[in-house]
Each structure stands twice: as structure tokens, then as C-alpha cells.
Image (cartoon, rainbow, N blue to C red):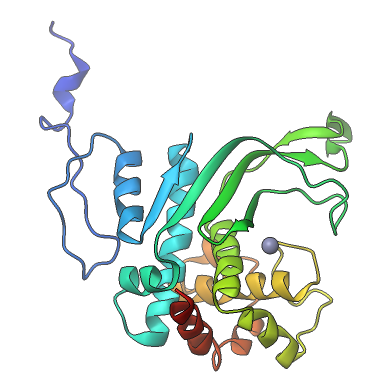
Length: 250
Ligand SMILES: [Zn+2]
């Protein structure tokens, strides 16, 4: 067959996998698609992705893991993958095809994209949520109350949920930190959650910390767009203690 499209591909058909950080070894592990590469990189952090993950969603989740691991590494000098594993051990990212039901939650009208409180070893990411209010596009209701497709998984979402787990593993030191600094609850923290509880504020402030470490705004304007850098200062003295406490719990 003359027009075989395969002739344009790498004859091996394999992806060359690099470690997630530049100082980590490349491997001879063989993958045939990007999803396999992402799964392999996540494994280096101790993360197992289970369920029907799309490549795009998995990429968002991996970017979040990578950014948070770099943050831990900056506090204790360990290689990023080890710093992450020392906090979380092995952790599962479970993709759920169904809808996360959050009826009349603390913030009516908000959607449920993921949850970290089932157990510290599993974070669930949901394909849909049970909406508490209709969704409008150009003045028209496109979804009534009921199941609403969730937006793609972002690095921010993954960091937020992982920070809830970090808080639990540290014996809720993260929440205590929020109380200690008396953070302005009226909107200073970033907007993964609109709940003004200590645990949600901590998880959002962690997003800012990790995003600004991993993606300096001058280099990555897309990632840092809309993230409030002012709250980063709250963590700089105490995050090392929170990481140590989480390691000890494990
Ligand atoms: Zn949350």
C-alpha cells in the first residue's frame, strides 16, 4: 500500500520518556501514546491513576503533582519525586464517570469537581457534578438542575485536592496556620473554592504557593494569571513544618 500513513511515524512507534524533572534519569520504558507516558511519570511520584482518564485531564493532574512536588523540594532539598512520595506514600487518583452529589453544600450553587476526604489515600475526580443552579450561556439555560459536565482537570484543582490530603496528614497543621495568620476571608485566597473555611483557605493558598514556585509569572503568564501572589507570604515560614508533620504521620 503506497499511502500508508504509518510511514511518517517514528519507525519504533515509541515515545522516549524523560523523568519529570530535568535531573532525573531517562528510562528505556516503552510507551505507544502520551497517556502511557503521563502514567509512567505519575508513578515516579507514587501516583496511580485509575479509571477512565482522558489524556488531557491526566496532563492537568500531572502538572499539579509536579508543581506541588517542586514546592516540597524547595523546602527540604530532596529530589521532587522523593519529596512528594515522602509526604503521600502511594496515592490514587480515581476517575469517576458519574456525578458528584453535593446537595446544598456549604456553598449552594458551587459544583463538586473532586474530593479528597474519602480517605487520605484516594482523591476522586468527577466527570460531572449535581448542579444546585442552572447554567446559562448567552442568557439561555443550557443545563437545568441536575448533572452538569465538569470542566477539564487543571493543575490548580489537583494541587487544591492534594493540599487537603497534606492538611489531613499533617494533623490539620495547615488549617491551624490559617487561623494563626488571620487571613482575610473575604476573597484574598484564590478561587478553587468559595468556602471560607480554614481547610478551603489553606488548600487555595497552597495553590498560589505551588503555582508561583513552579511557574514564575514572567515565564508562564497563562498558569499564573489570576492567582494572587500576596498570600504566598503566609506559608513561607511554616510550610516546612507542615511537610515534616505529614512525613511523620506516614
Ligand atoms: Zn476544597
